[in-house]
Length: 154
Image 1 (cartoon, rainbow, N blue to C red):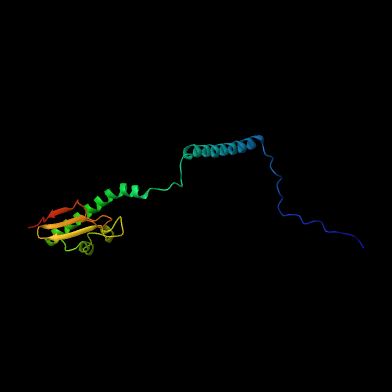
Image 2 (cartoon, helix red, strand yellow; image 1 turned 45 degrees about the vertical axis):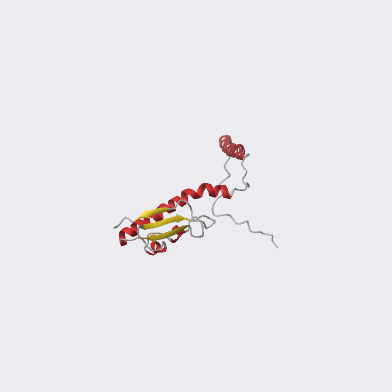
C-alpha cells in the first residue's frame, strides 16, 4: 500500500504577513495612554480637594429650610389667587362665592389652593364691599396679615 496523504487544503486568499509596528506608533500609543491616565488622576485629586469637607450624609433641618422657602411661595400663591379673584370679579361683576369657583372657571389650578402643603391654606370670604383673603398657618389659626379687597366693580 502506498502511503499517499493529501496535501493540506490551501486557502483561496493569501494571508498577508503581520505588519511590523514602528517605534513611532508605539510611542504615540503610550503617550496617549499616559495622557489619559494623567487626566483621570488629576480629576481624582481635584474631586478630593473640592469635596473632602462635604458631608453628603448630613441631615437637613427641614423646619429651618421650610421657614426660609415657604414665605415667598405663599406670597406668590396669594398674588395668584388675588389676580384670579379680580379677573373673576371683572368677568361676573362680583367676586366668586368660593375659591373653588375659580378652579371651575379655569382661572386657578386645584394645586393653587393648597401648594406648598396638602391642607387648605386660604380662608376666603365674600362680602358686599368685596372679599377677604386670609392665610391659614399650620395651627389652623388665621394669619394676622389678612388682606381685605374692596370690590372693583360698582
